[in-house]
Image (tube, rainbow, N blue to C red; front, side, top):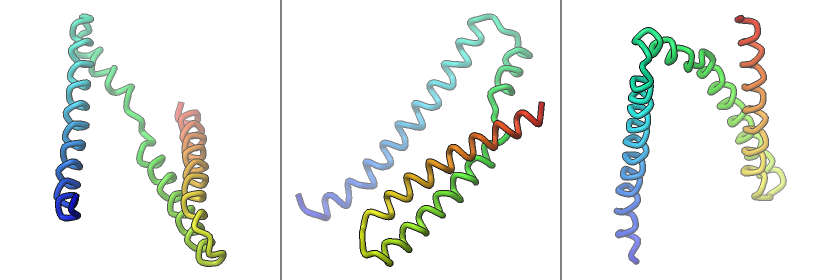
Length: 116
């Protein structure tokens, strides 16, 4: 296949996948609400159910994970330049981002325990 044809299909496939994910999200969200209504819950109970689902620390978690991702990327690029080995960037991205996920989870639990 020619490169021009492949270059045309990449954005088309990307938008199709994003659209499919969006439609699936909306479908399952509406299906969840239908199931709550079919259970016979009142409007106040449904409102309380959706307020309990919200995570008040989501932006803080995303921030911690992003910081650790950046640290892993930075150290990976520095070690790649220093040692001329190409495996440092993906290795440190996964390891340090994983540490970021664990740290964000532990910090969120600590803040939730202090909040209650």
